[in-house]
Amino acid sequence: MSIKVLLAVDGSEVSDRACDRLVALARAGAPFEVTVIQVQPFMSIEAQAMHLQSYGEAAMASARKRLDAAGIPYQTHIAMGPAGVRICEFADAGGFELVMLGTKGLGWVNTVLMGSVAKHVIESSKVPVVLVR
Image 1 (cartoon, helix red, strand yellow):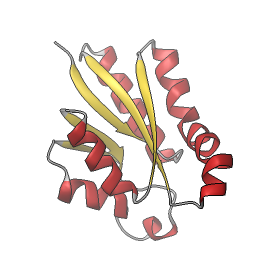
Image 2: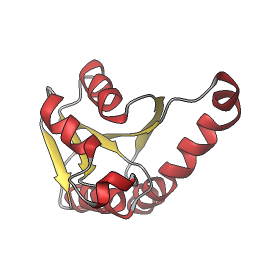
Image 3: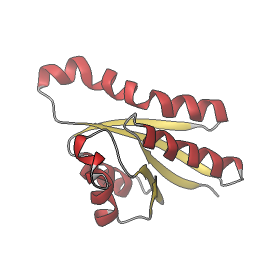
């Protein structure tokens, strides 16, 4: 029986460490069913049509490379809106058993405090959350 894991990434170094941790656990024998989620901020309709997919794919590239190298199958999902809210909504709707993400992302506020996305997810998620530093 596998554990449904939602790996939230933003392309940051800390996000890469969260992915590396997931890979290490999988190599140790943890049976994961992985979905990688990347959330873009709100964009105009025109920007969505031109950039949402490409920006999301770029932010997931490092995680995809790591998972591919480890031979771990995964699905991807790109969403738009407030990242913490979308991660929690997707985790709940998808029946995930675990959410994994880095403590800080790319936002400037995250250089001072625990990431606002991570804070929102640990406070709002209905499923267990693993934060990686």
